[in-house]
Image 1 (cartoon, helix red, strand yellow):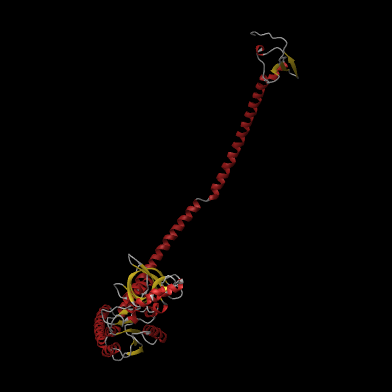
Image 2: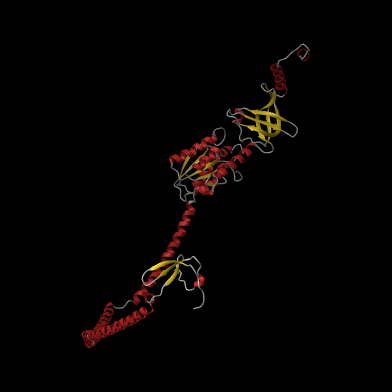
Length: 451
């Protein structure tokens, strides 16, 4: 075949060569396991998954179709170490060989454990494990709901413990599958339905022990979210004491086993009876002690209580005493106020304002006459002083000097009086003022010298 196919006369198309190579690869590498690190991860809208597996020396493209992706319990991520099972094929359009993965699991840790860790981190970040969201269990529930398998050991253990602890307690069973495909959805629907019915005070959700795969229904996200949105408090009782599931983290209380959940959901009737008896004894002792205290106090009050007739007599006597003191006090007070009134009346009569007003009126008239005489004298003196000053002013007036034939010469421009001929210049204009009128003159000659 090889000789005929690749003879020098044989010419192949690219598609034919690719098909031949695909046949060779698929025939010889039909099933293999491959180890490597994930890179170039892609989840397109088709639902398929594309990535590359690589090691320090090489890499290969991988594809995981939608049907295989749906069975994954965890989500792939770049950098994750994987072990993949699949077959080698060729993608014609790019001429590249690739691994068609049918199953993958993390290298070094199981797929379920990886899925558990991934989901736990996701729900923790969303706050589904927060203590603030957890609902306290009722102390005395009237009816308990149980969500578990009707044929498993868990329901028998729960009913046995409840019958032993509190035989009259009502139990409502909601039967579900607790493992296998679709079991997680059944458990979640049962929780929602029990909340819708609202007929129980507390829910026990769980099953007996088993492998991680057997318990996986209680690790599904749909169950965790149903537990979180439940308005009824939930006790998670899945597996044995060492088994932890997502349901345990979200539930309001985690019980190590289904039997322990029945122990925790309500106290036994014997325990309650003992508590009631103990509380009754304490109440009786407290009431007895309180009665003793009140009886003693009542006896003390009885001894302190006197004959009311004697007490009334004392009160009447005290009233009479206070009445006498009040009358005496009023008499004394009235007498004192009368004496004070008389003294004030006498003082007022002695200090009658009419006499003082007449005296002041006479004094004002006298002062007015004296003021008028002084004012006349002052005016006469001022008139005489004015006359004397006018006479002196008349004698010293420059107008008198001018009337005697004198004149006053001033410069034309600056209106300054000329007192010295030496300060003048030939041709300078002067203004000469006489007793009657004035004249403008021009200096023709100057004669200076001492007068």
